[in-house]
Image 1: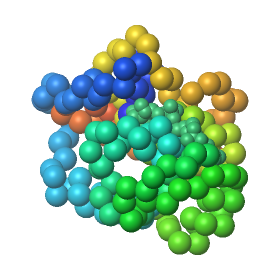
Image 2 (image 1 turned 135 degrees about the horizontal axis):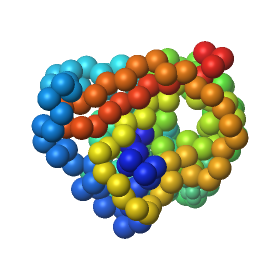
Image 3 (image 1 turned 90 degrees about the vertical axis):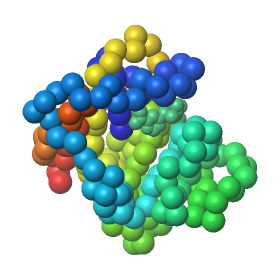
Length: 174
Ligand SMILES: NC(=O)c1ccc[n+]([C@@H]2O[C@H](COP(=O)([O-])OP(=O)(O)OC[C@H]3O[C@@H](n4cnc5c(N)ncnc54)[C@H](OP(=O)(O)O)[C@@H]3O)[C@@H](O)[C@H]2O)c1
């Protein structure tokens, strides 16, 4: 997920210009070529999205290509792409019975509500959190409401030339 410096993942009006790159501001940082970014995306076998993130992704222009995507919803949403499946119900069953046998690298896109539920159920083994160099003041809180205290292990830090910083953590049981 990408969070602002003050811990928000979306603005109240859902606008996304706060995620725009400010250009090169941090000389010691790295930059990623389009080829490298595409190679990374290829390692993802399946995306999982909450319905609100799905609806927002459709508005913005679908960024998940033809990679299999599961959308969580209790509503009857219309299917827009062959690669999108809808699921409603128990998330542990979804991960253990439906996804894990088929996919190795399952990328939980969000949003806040779905990430919080996955964390509460112990279904996350790695967190990749990118901090954007901006304060938003208000919006949708990272991971939604309160979670219980839980320590995670820092595995990697990447600072980018544009001032974004990516933190990778694994769970203490991983
Ligand atoms: N900054 C980032 O990295 C980032 C990443 C992802 C998303 N976002 C932003 O976050 C916002 C959306 O986040 P959000 O927290 O409001 O919503 P969300 O997590 O995307 O979606 C919540 C919805 O998921 C469905 N859901 C959750 N658990 C379910 C279950 N067990 N069974 C069936 N359905 C289930 C429900 O859908 P129904 O109401 O349809 O039943 C629920 O209303 C958007 O603005 C998006 O752009 C930001």
